[in-house]
Each structure stands twice: as C-alpha cells, then as structure tokens.
Image 1 (cartoon, helix red, strand yellow):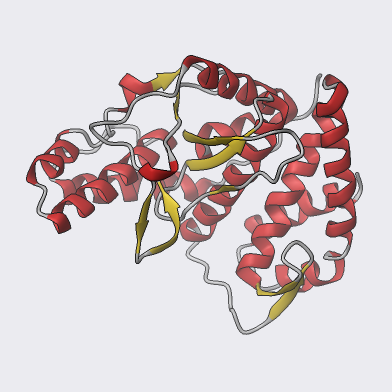
Image 2: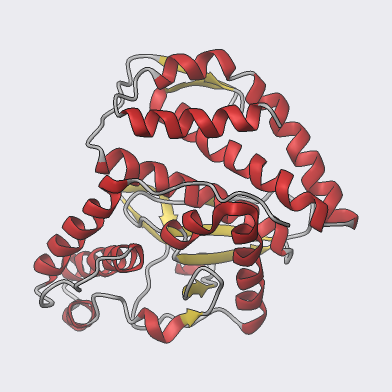
Amino acid sequence: MLVPALDFVLAPVRDLYRDRVSRIHTALQSGSAPARSTATVYCLAHHALEGAEIAARAGDTATFDWYRAHPDAKASALSTPTVVGPRIVVSPGLEDMLRSPLSETPYYLLGPDTAAAPGEERELASAAYDMGARAGFAGLLADHAVVACLLRRKNLGDTLISWSVTRLPGTVFCDHVGEPAVLGRDLIHEAGHNWFNDALTATARNISEETTFYSPWRKTRRPAFGFLHACWAFPLTMIYTTRVLPDTDGPTHDFLAAYLEQQRGLLAATAEDHTRALALITDPTLRQRLHTVHDEALNL
C-alpha cells in the first residue's frame, strides 16, 4: 500500500506545546521544561497536572509528590514500540475510570499504579498504529494518540465506543474487537478530535455557538464546534478505511466496507452546511485543512 501522507502539521500547535509544557512544569515545580516540548511531552504533562490537582484536592501528599517528581507520569516504563514512536498502551478497567465535574466523560490517568496493557493488546495496538501510518496518518497518530487506553473487548459488529477528553490531549479511549484495521480506524477518529482541539486552541479561535447545524450522526442540530468536529473526524476514518480495505479480507473487510458505505450517506447530508460552518473558522490554514479532508471524503 503506497499512499500519500496527509499533512497534519500546523505551526501554531508547536508553539502551543512549548508554552503549555512550560506552564505545567512551572505549576508542578518540577524543574525546567525539556528542551524539546514534543507532542509526547505535552500529552504526558497533562496527565501529571491532572493527577497532581486531584491528589491536592484529596489531601493525598504522597501521590501529589509522585506527580511532581514524574512530570512525564513515568511513561517510559510503560512504552510500547510502534512505527510512529513509543506509545503508552494501557487497558484500565471501567472501575479505574475517573469522573470529574470538569469532564462529562470518564477518563483514566497514568499514575504510580499504572501497568502496561497485556502483551496481546500491546501487539494489537502496535499493529493498528502500523496500519494507520501506512494509510498516510503517521503524523496524526504520532502527535495525537500518544496514550491509548484499550477498554472493553467486543465482537465484530457490536457497538464500539471511543472517545477523547479535552483535558488530556493526545490520549484516546477505545473499545476494540482484536482487529488492527478496526482499532486503527478508531485511533484515527479520536486522534482527529485531539488534533482539532489543539488546532483551535493554538490559533486562539473561538467558534460562535449561535448558529446550529444538523448532524446526521447525532440526528440533531449541534453548534458549529460539535458539527465541525464530526465533519473532520469521520472523513478521516473514511479516507483511512478506503485505503486499508484492499489489505483486509473476510468479516473484517465486510465490516469496514459497510462502515464506509454508511459514512458516505451521512457525510453527503453535511455538504451544504459544512460550507456555512467553515465560514466561522477565521484562521485560513485551519479552514483549508478542514475543507480539504471533508472534500476528499465526499468524493470517495
């Protein structure tokens, strides 16, 4: 499979990494920030900040001190080698997930008791990253899917739930069916959400919520922020699926082919509204990226 890589580089995002990491390390009083504030450092610093804040509110001095001493959440001990670089692959139980008044969605934090996922799941994740990279998404996965939390093992055809949270950029949460091609799709979907959040933050752009648009995925009207998120993340999975289909067979091929056909119909319903929603994105580079991916998916 020889396909063109998609361009996910956005210069202001690099500045965001450097500024945010410096601020977090200062808040944690953990010494100076690393010379290179990479996407990985940025992701892990948010785990440390969130963990330290929760520990401080609970009066848990030992855990608070651990995060201060480990602003990378000691992720090097959990790393799994992949084609896009070392990834942190964990498999927390639902009972290990946290809830916060600041996040409607449950999430998991790397911490002193975190263990790497079992070998089988780390191999699955590594293969999924490989498929995503070969499909042209190496840059997206390298910067925006640093921590992969594999949740429930399900059967092909079951409803798979995946999500990301704004407080933990670079972290993704996914159910899985043990198939790299399917997991690759969901990693890309959630990494896409992380990319868009960082892009909006880095370009200091707020999207007006006064106008709403019909989302065929939710079957309801949504503010531009949620509508554009969907019109970015789902097209990414469509492009990925189109590119990996020739390398799949049997039930996995049938499952992904059906998914692609379903998404074609849903995305077609957004064509007119997407143009209007894009007008609310004032950064020209970001607006063009969103348009290019949406347009490519529409023409699959």
